Amino acid sequence: MKRSRANSAPVAPGNGRPAKRAKKRLKAQADRDSRFYGNPLPGVKPEELSGNLIVVEGTDGSGRSTQISLLTEWLEGEGFAVETMGLRRSFLVGEDIDGLLAENAVTRMTLALMYSTDFFDQLERRILPALRSGLIVLADRYIFTLIARAAVRGIGRDYLHGIYEIALRPDLTFWLNVRPEVAFDREFKKSQTISYWESGRDMSLSNDLFQSFIRYQSMIKREFEYLSKRHGFIELDGEGSVSDVNRLLRTRIASQLGIRGTYYKPSHALAHLWH
Amino acid sequence: MATATPEIATTEISASESTTAQAAPERALVAKRPYPGALVVVEGIDGSGKSTQLYLLKRWLEIGGYRIHFTEWNSSPLVKSATRRGKQRRLLTPTTFSLLHAADFADRWERQIMPLLQGGYLVLADRYIYTAFARDAARGCSPHWLRNLYSFAPIPDITFYFRAPLDVAVTRIIAGRPKLKYYEAGMDLGISLDRTESFRIFQEKILNNYDQMVETDRFVLMDGTMRVNKLQKLMRQLLGERIDLAHFAPKRKRK
Image 1 (cartoon, each protein chain N blue to C red):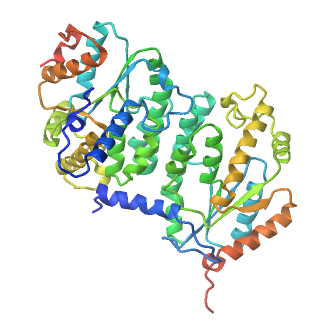
Image 2: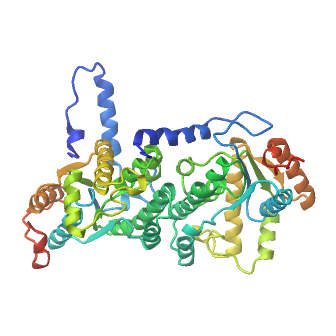
Image 3: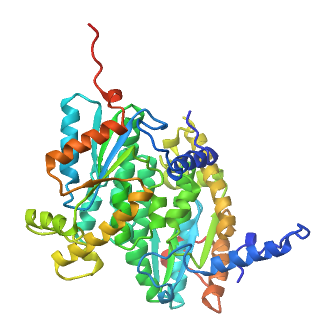
């Protein structure tokens, strides 16, 4: 199964150690085929999970949420039951994180661990039951955003991967890649302001809000480039039109789920998203 | 201007990890640490007498005017409401239970423990990362995962491990408490429907996990069945041997 451009790229010949390379590639493939990165969560039997986990990653302004709304409607139209997850949506600590962010009283490690609590609460109490029942889970961001945000704030990548090694490996991970400048335009158009955290203002990158946003988002983007290689993301041009990006998403998801046709036209309720 | 690049970042954390990994040599006084303070920890199962002993140690140091700070497991106000909600409604899994306590610890680590160690304080901790290693592993979390989760924590200068036989500890707790709480008794593990029985089995698992760390984490073994005042005398003596207390003593005005 083709997982990404990065991983399907042919190995350069003549490096002198083809056998080792091939072995490494096989191991990487086997790793990607298991449902967890490391040891599974305590008490979870991977073979029980019959549903599919599809992740859409991308910064604010990449069109992530729009695409998830459209995909939900398409999949439901095709007869698939859909569950969604996202950041700060857990019953356990979702509101607490909102509070911590608003008060700006929290330090980086505490925040990173609160986010991981939020993530695993959703995963264990909502997402795994959904996958056991054969649902399609659409994740509006996943561990990768959490890793990228914490990594640019100075928390070690290996440490972060260690925390999330018990997380479920997605069946597909899409990365809607947009340039920081484009994300800035879209965000500003949407909310007439730029959020404190999305511009990384806690990192004192610049007093100029635009500069701070661009520098912060560029750092996040670099982390994503690394994560994309490591985890085999399917990278899509998030600057394309909503309908173009949606068509690419549908094509890839249709082949994953064995859906024949990918025709879709949004209902009246979602028509305003379609351009 | 503080620019945290990922490169700097990695070295920062791996630096603290390497302190974790290397076996500190036997030493009498404050070891070479990246901070002038010192960290004293008590560990042990419920009813082992550790909190009483740390309280007495703290009083002794307080009365002497030493520069100390006392910190307790699971006490950060920032994380409290989430922990309470999770426990009351029984929403916690082994993983989220562990992560919430790690967040609580991280908050105290970032805002109290590290700044105070850097400011030259003697920090006294009632329970530390070993509580998570012993208890969360008893709940089914992988020891390897737990060690990584807390790898940012500084290694204590001295860890007193209070050990009392299971029966003694369990009797002490049950005698003093009208009802054992759900998570406290390990009811989430589904070992037994009887709370006292569940508590006993849970504590036994934790005790075994602690015992395994005596060597690897260089615990100072304390006999929890000794008389309180005798044990305290011993604790003060051991503390004095390991840590240069003069370093934390009040500065005398010159006359």
